[in-house]
Image (tube, rainbow, N blue to C red; front, side, top):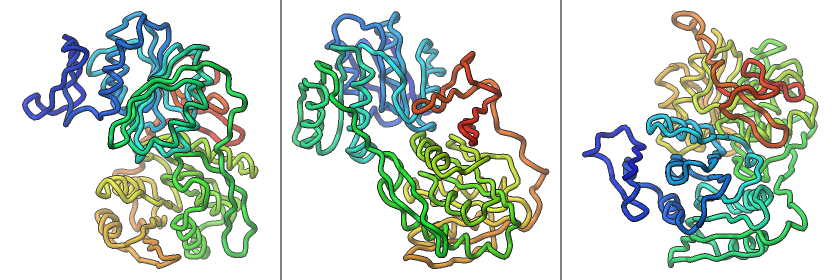
Length: 432
């Protein structure tokens, strides 16, 4: 029996599940998500071993590991949109000593062609527009006659019709809760690839409106986020008398780059570093800073923030979920990278929980109401203990940037890789 362990918990505190007629066993924290377990059980339905397989939507890499062990000769690529999920997959591959799987974190699917693809998602993690965008991308990367196996949890009534229109063939089973598992076969070329990119404008008081774009899956797709606008407005006003004329600004959890771009317009000589764990957010930001001609700004794909630099201002709109763990990362990053006298500003709908989180590192907080949100201001008053944090760049994990597609892939020997940095227009992109 093949055994895969994807948890650090002792076996007695873990959940053990068997698949494929008791030939594969997965030991996990509380059980695999239904979408991934359903796709594992579909492996025998594929038939003869394919040449190349793509797995996307998996957050553990378990399906990719089972495929690699089930078909040792098959080339398996495991794709993730978020670098946190990609790193989790890499850890699971390493801990189970599974080799030969290529892990890619990119805003679009890695280029094929593939014989077979496996897609998993839920209505909470994968909005409808993102699913359709990925379905058209999957169709493009599959060989003629190639099959995409799909497992999705949520309302699928309208999605099924559109997926059928994309592929020309769809066979599914749907339960009463809307869970879908089935296959779509590529029977014809797409007449026209749709663009799901959205454009809108945003501005600070007294400044001209800036055209911006966003991609499906990026926070607040199709419109400027009111919390982000509140943050940018307060940051521009409250720091106008305190920042030097050429400040270094860190936009944590940048999304499409809204806040950092607005502040760069308020401070034309500023240098902005944009950080996000979501590759499509970094791609949207890249498109925005290039389209409006911003120069010498940095894009960082990271789920751990950054631990180097001397920033005058840190801004962020941390997500409300995860019991403030992500907000805690924003606060810890501010503590590490703000220079003495540097200012941090985070925004939330309600100040209480976030303010308490900030006060684990900073005592001097001020709550500033704006647009129905609370912007919390704090400052670094003393020098960093022990001096500056050392660089977090890893020379053993280069980054490949493929224009319009890949953004970060653990690899080596690729053209265009220079010491973990890749200049895209005038913006440097790297993986932290």
